[in-house]
Length: 146
Length: 381
Image (cartoon, rainbow over all chains, first blue to last red; front, side, top):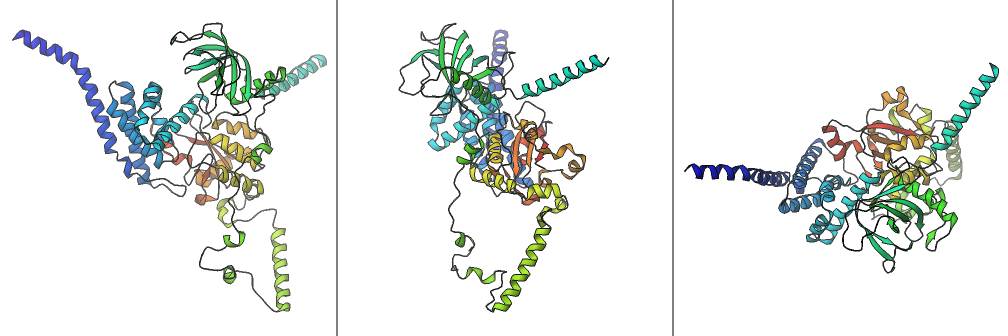
């Protein structure tokens, strides 16, 4: 009985970081889905943003930023990365400032090859949009302009 | 005593002349750090079918720059480097320390970070590369490269702008497609008199109105100007042809969405509109205040009177160049206001009805306690 208890304690001790990471990833995915990026306003040249529009945008970008931080920290986050890329494509289409490119930059910098290969799952136009935005953000970070 | 005074004056004058001359000299390129794997080539030929790839230069390698050339076809650069440190080798084809190879540098997709002689990061690689390529090119011209590259001139900027959409000027007046050309003038303010005496009286009245208008020409009028309407300096700037042409250039050449090159587009718009004569050297939007001051523009935010009048981008006069920064390492942002008050949009590399301060990025930084603010509202007096 004592032996079993010890084994159980040891197992839970070693498994707890992995479990915590699993819950972090699940939470990030749920928050990203709850941000409902599809329902955000599409900003055109004539759009004057209202307070509500700005709040909805802020919520979506905060969820994306948190998800990127989790994906850059943890390993085995393929599902989360797919969700991030899906959300980023929508945000890039709806926001001409292309801020989503800067938000997902840490993910691109963590593993460029894996990031770019993940884009192959997307339609060509979406893949081009996200690759362009993230490379522009990387170039701006490195050599500037604005 | 007199001699000491004179020597001191000469010393101060020489120091001032020397420092102002040095201010315009671009940073000297010295070393380069590879942030990605690049091909090392034996010659300055970067075409896909060129069979000159000698080796692979792995990420994190470091090298000294020996020679720089601007490429004719793409405008990108070829750099001849000597390796001083080699990153983690990948395969047998990796370069060795001491090898000399040509590598490719593109502004669009840079995999190189530049350092000057003091080991500081080079602020504007394009300017530094152009300067170095000029010096190297004069020594020994190489086929496929530009011998004497320069930063864009005003003539080049004007020549490369997008053409205006072709619109029939008569049809442009007509907003109702059902109306014919003859119908358009039904509600025009110009009276359609048939009698010659009446027409003469009308013409005299028109001339009188025109003379009155031109006598007030020292202060251009615009009802939309609001609080700026009584300021002759602002009105002359905002209603001037340079502002009109700069906005027009910006609107013609903007992109549908941001390319993170706002300053480059604003530089070109200002040159295309004859607002400035030389391509500003700064590599970050925040440098615009310094660069534009050097070309005769003034910052309204330096004057307490104007600072009190400008609390938000909506208060900024038409045509002013707004520079934003938040005292971090970020490049900042720069936009040209396209109209008066809240009618005005903002153009840089793309056009928006909202200022940069309303952008998701500015709001995110504000929430983190690093708010962006307007550090420059530049006009040309």
